[in-house]
Image (cartoon, rainbow, N blue to C red):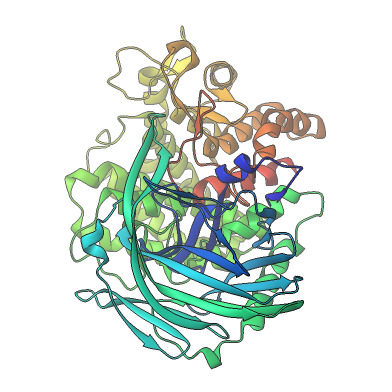
Length: 598
């Protein structure tokens, strides 16, 4: 996990690191390591894809001095705490500040059982004067990437026991409740106008957006001279009884959970331990989530019926979750958990089958084919589950290739590779031969070799209609799935092309090197690339060492920009892209990559 110490590290690097916490359900914190909210999706308390508490500012009043602690930039002023930050430890979720003879630290933790965000303050006043310590919450109410003006900030508030309730939306009956166990709340409403947020787009351009933030009042506590004061601040969307909050238990449970996840991983795999802890942010017991912060269309409740239709984003979310099964569950021998998720997604697929439309057909086909691949990974771990999936696999294949024209979806290399793979998985599970399906598998294999493979260019077309064959990311699947659809010399030639045209130490390029086109780098394809290499060279200590050297720089980048995770996307020019937060599939694939090399 990322750590910063003044005088050793550069504070600017900490500002580039994304710090994320989650309650594993639908609330999270997403900020920089200096608790900066420059990016448009950053906030201290994000609920259901809406940021409701963007940040906190602290004030220390000591004799005739007033210290302000925060990271807020407006058109007329900049409040920064850079000079006061002494230590940042994202593993412990702790931040330390030093003002000479007065110091304080704050630690963050989500309650395991609720949406409660707990912030613990520990203040040391070593001066000979009493001090006042204040916390000012900065409140907004906006969906991700959408800014609101001051008209939206005329929130109503009322005092409640130990704090304040601010009504964010009368229409949606949404509130934010902020309480403290020792400090006193004082109403002092004001608006901070034109707060700036900056971020780098996928076009590698810096964009700045502005919004106004509402300050309902402050929480104040007296810190006597030469004394230590510990107290807690709580943020939630529902009113709660502060006397029922056992903050020590919340922090202890978090530590125990984290240590339990790490305990089964060898000590030398530091990065894998971090990845394993952070992938736990994507708990799927109640929701289907593939990224943080929680955007609305990435949050599908398992009780939800697709009455209002299904979107392309819904299908992509389900597909990414299906593709993450191995790295999130099976690598850690969580076979039952993997089975539970696949059964739930099977129910979704059957729901969608009845209401799907032409615009999502292709994505829906890919979801089904990836589902078969993940189900096969589960069956390889535990053969007793085969009977649960054989009928559904049969149903998918017959729907795609018997009921409909078999060429309908064989128009791109990804679908062709997945289709051939699915057929071989089905044949392997059958006790008897299925000649009809076998012939379709052979037909798909011939389509790949005759209509996609270009011997002269030693590459695959991405789409069957492409006039010229150009190296593309999706051709890696012909080599890396459970059953590769090409063998022999073609396999060697294609892997060589991928290495020369698409490979970088941080992932595969979105466009080939020879095209001289700008591109993005995706780490999520690296596990497929290494799988293809190990298949070609055999799994030995020597081949694993060679493969490790191919991905060493990627492993070293874990925690560099996101605590306990790897970036979803890289720029070819090395510029950071502020595109999204944690990505389940990318993290799961890096875990799978570790597993292959260990």
